Structures are given as C-alpha cells and as structure tokens.
Length: 193
Image 1 (cartoon, rainbow, N blue to C red):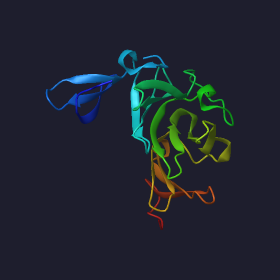
Image 2: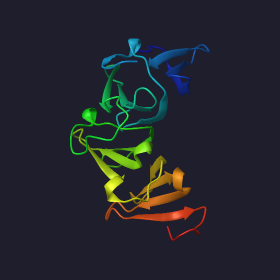
Image 3: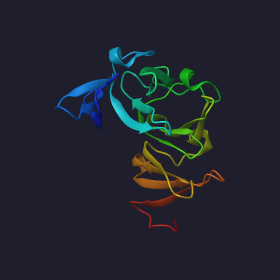
Image 4: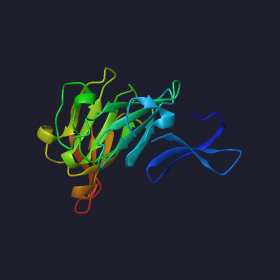
C-alpha cells in the first residue's frame, strides 16, 4: 500500500503503479498471483483498467493470465474476480471466478454496478453481476454480429456501445430489449443514434 500522495495512475509494461507527488518514481500497486497483498502481487499483461463507484481498481489481463483482477483500495488486497487463466469459453450462469475468457479487453460498469467485459476472442461481451455471476450479454449464441469486440461504453440513456473491431463497426446494444444495431461501419452510413 502506498502511503505517499497519489498524483496519477499509469500502466507501464506489466505494472500498474502510482506516481508519487514528491518525486518522479513509481510505486508498484498491482502486479502476479492472487489473492495476495498488493505489495507482493505480480500483474501479467494489463489491458483494461476501470474503477467502481467505491474507487476499487479492476484490471483485465491477457496472454498468460486471462482474468480480471480487483485491487480493493480499503484493504490493499488483490483478488481474482473473473477468469480461470485458461484461454477458452466456459462458465456462463456460474461464478465468474470459475469462468474461462480469452483476450480480455476494455471493461465498463453500468449504473447498477454490473461489470461488462469485452471478451474479444470469444466474440462476446460478458457481464458480471453484483453477486459475481457471469453471463453473456452480447455475442455468442445470442447473435453473430460481434467480431473481436475491443472497447465498451454506456451512453447517458444507459445503452451499451461496442467497438466491434473485427467487423470494423460500432454497435449499440439497447439495454431494455437486448437488441444490437450497427451505428456505423466501414460500409454503412451513420444510423439514427
């Protein structure tokens, strides 16, 4: 746990750290195996970083880890909240810690505190609810529009936008109906948003 004032968070190589306000050096905040104290944790290939409403930090990892890690700010402990480390697809309807994911990219929280993850190589957006249960929110058997989703965000109406990199498009998911539509792409004109 860093006792110095935090100036900014940064991702550098395989470390997520905090830059000290008093000097130009980085203290390791996240980095390895879980669950352990943050001071001894090693992080593998961080891709996405997001925080929840309480300021806890969530990091999606790729390559050898295939997991989502959480840094609990209050306890300075790192835990695995999703992914087994096995690059595959499995686990929908069960605990997210027992699920398999591949090539995790960006993550985003909705207003209710559910975590959405771009599970890129599985061509899905996965959702982890407040009870730690993982499901497929978009893609997979729910529809074949997704092709290597990379980035996610919610608009002011609560609808989810997906950077659908493999299809060179941006999709909108109506969160009331679950319907996916193409907002724009390399072959389609901009639709009514």
